[in-house]
Amino acid sequence: MSSSPASSPEPSTTEPSTTEPSSPEPSPSGPLTTAQLAERAGVSVATVSKVINGRPDVAPATRARVEELIRDHGHRRQKRPARAAPVLELVFRQLRDSYALKIINGVQIVARKHRLAVVLSELQGRRTPTYGWVEDVLFRRPTGVIEVFSGLTDTQSGQLRSRGIPFVLVDSGGEPDHASPSVGASNWTGGLSAAHHLIQLGHRRIAVISGPEFAMASRARVDGYRAAMDTAGVPVDPALVRVGDFQTEGGHRHAVDLLRLPDPPTAVFACNDMQALGVYRAAAEAGLRIPDDLSVVGFDDLPAAHWAFPPLTTVRQPLTEMAATAATMAITLAEGRPLAQPRVELATELVIRASTGPPRDR
Image 1 (cartoon, rainbow, N blue to C red):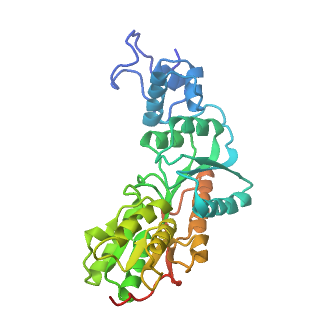
Image 2 (cartoon, rainbow, N blue to C red; image 1 turned 45 degrees about the vertical axis):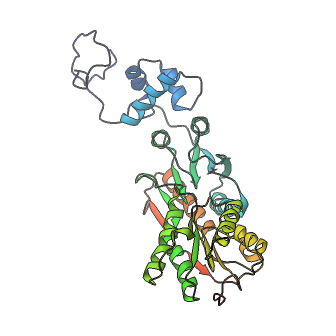
C-alpha cells in the first residue's frame, strides 16, 4: 500500500478509482505528485511525465484526463524542479511592420540585463496558439512567455500555470481573465484625444476606422472617439463608423468607400498608423490633399508616421515600454515574487504633425 505511515489503515476494497470524493482514501490538501497523478488517472508514471513535459506521444483522451487532474489539483514535483531555460518566449499573432520591432526591442532590453535569450513565434493571424505550440513551450520550459495581441484559452493558461511557466499579455487581443497579468496602453484616452483634436480644429464629419471587433484596444479607441463626439454635442453618423482590421489594405478600402459618400468626412481617425497610410493612398487616388481636403489621425506612432508625407498626426502608444514592462513582470513571476499589480496601463500621447488642419469651406 502506498499511503504514508501517518495515515489510518485503509479498508480493503476493489472499487475503481472513479468513486465519489467521499471515498475512504484521504485526498491530499496540496498539489499531487507525478505518482499520485498516475494513480488517479490509471496510467503509468512515464505517461504522466510525458504529459507534464509536453511530449506528443500520448493519446488525446489520456492527455485530457491527466490535464484535468493537474488543473483541478495542481502538480508538485517530488524531485527538485528542472531549471527553466534562460529564454523568454515572445509570441505574436502576426509579425508585421515596425509594431513588432518595437515590441521585440523592448523585450530584448530587459532580457539582456538578465542574460536571457528571446525566441519569436508567430500565430499566422490566429487569435490563440495551436495545441502544438503549447506542447513545444512545455517541452522547452522557458523562463517566461509574452503574448502580443493574442491570448490563451483557459486550458492553455492552466497548462502553463500548472508547470510554473509565467506568462504576460501585451496589447491583449481580447479581454484577459483576471488571473492573467497584462500590459496595455490608455486606448480610451488616446481615442478621446484624437477625436477632440479634430473637433477643436472645426471638424464635424469625422470618420473612424476601428481595428478588429474582438480586440479590446480597438473597442476602447472607438469608445474614446464616441465620448469626445458626445461631449462636444457632435452626432456620430453610423455611415462614418467602419470596422477595420489594422491592415493598410483595409484602411484604404474603407477610406475609398467613405470618400465616395454623398456627404464625405472631412477627417478620418484611423485606429492604427497602418490603416492611416491606407487612407493617405485613398485620398491621393481621389485627388484630395492632406490636410487641405482631408485631415487624418493615426494611432501607434510607428516610424512610418514620421516619414509619411505629410507627417502623420497620431496617438503615440509606448510599445517599447509596454514590452519591457511585460518582460520584467514575467521575470518577476519566474523568480517567485508577486507582482505589484497584475494589470499595467501606460499613458498614450497625441503627437500633432502636418496631417491635420481646419476643414476646407464647402
